[in-house]
Image 1 (tube, rainbow, N blue to C red):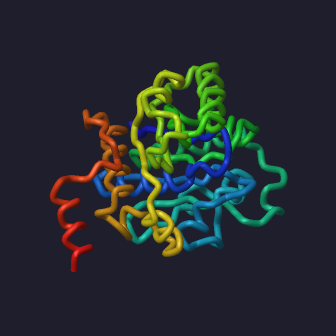
Image 2: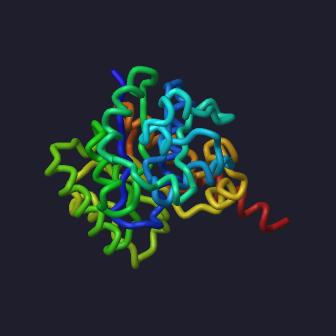
Length: 259
């Protein structure tokens, strides 16, 4: 039976789309059949992030009854399948967001995992994604305002009787001004699926229109997304500080500095 995850954030700019793409690519790398769906129909980003901003058939066409869901699926070079939304404002008119649930039921028959990159906030689009999902993944930064918005999102999902699978904390720097991971876990009363460090590799992967899993497979962020995906699959992976470096790594850095 396919699992449907709505990747939600209470506010924009916290790395929701980046996390959706990298979780999807990670699951695919782990041997799972995955479809990433852009449920952010007003301001879509999946196609832009993956270098395909304009495609012939989009999720908008499917929701408007102008195409079948199978016709809107495109395969990324990683093997991960993607359903982009349209960048055209005209294509956002007369869309019934309630149809998202019915469309995703059809999609569940042809894949094992569906990740919905939802719209930021708690508007109609985000609520439609929550309604269509089996489980919710919350993305937040370690900042009080972002975590507070994440809590509002969790409360809404719980009102809809949706399971909170866990939290992805992004742009983690380990700074004193940030909320500790333990405090975020306690405030949100949810499992932490992953702590993604602030990483130049992610910015470089975005400029390359790809996932960091593929462009920088040995980076700290890539390793953390892989581990987060394993936790999504139910593996018991110990949560460690993503900024922690080994003795040998520090030694090599010191030797390079002396050259």
